[in-house]
Image (cartoon, rainbow, N blue to C red; front, side):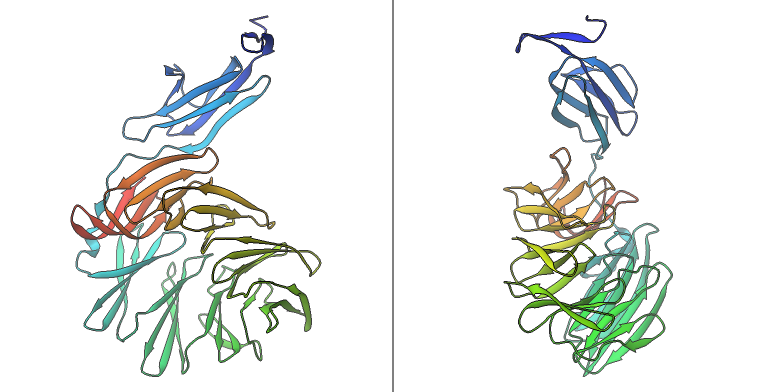
Length: 411
């Protein structure tokens, strides 16, 4: 019976069939320990005939953070340890290419490939774009202004809006950072609302000027609606969705106006729309309204304030100081983390859903699938963070060992 894969369980006093442990992680030369016993096999690892029960698994490699977790192996089942890349055990280094800049703040793109740097001296604002992959630094503009330039990255691609004001004129510059193309448009009133198209084949912006919505790309400016009075967004087919004065969610499709239903909370912004759900923001919460046949099917309110689109997993991350949630394409949500450590910023670290959690003095890597945390950096000052997950580098503006500037950290 033993050789056939059966074991005696002294707890239940029953004979049980064995289970299987499968381990496939990066780097492949990592060592695997089961209950502190090193497994003398190379990765990927397949261990059949394991007695059912609880085990302590440890993944270790010099120069990397050790990964440990209690796991259960069940009878006639396979326990998988996969989609894990060990974090490097590194210290941050200052990026010398930016040493000459007195950086006031940074605005990383969602992918982390590019970072817009804003410096200020005697009411003159300088904006520079830093390519984190090639370490290229290029100056975009220098403008004398009493107001800091407004920066809006597309959540879906490496496109950028740089909004500046000079006298009574508002200048809106659309920048394609990957192809090094840009176009500027001048307005004579403040731009009240700006949104990016989900179509990423080329930069396309929707801008509201005195209750009229225009499309802006690298070539033209076109008027597409006559009037809007409240929060609005255009979907991927350029159908207009808005909140009317009575707080009804309304859409215009093929010229026909449809009211989907009333929302109990006052909406400040429409964040994203697909065929299954719409994401909205109030001054306190993030609202997810499920949609079915142009009717609001259900409404869920999350007590979170920040929101970020994860390009790797095609879902939205939303968080408060103490909770982290995921919003999926079908409108379902999941609580990923509830913590006693403050969360200031959340960013994706890989394609498997591992995320960075940062506070004013610490950066943590968190794996929601296994609910494991690794401290990547502490004992410094962290102001703003970006992540290039293709090169597995973290970039942050802050202070390390008494020096202020832009730093990078291999993870």
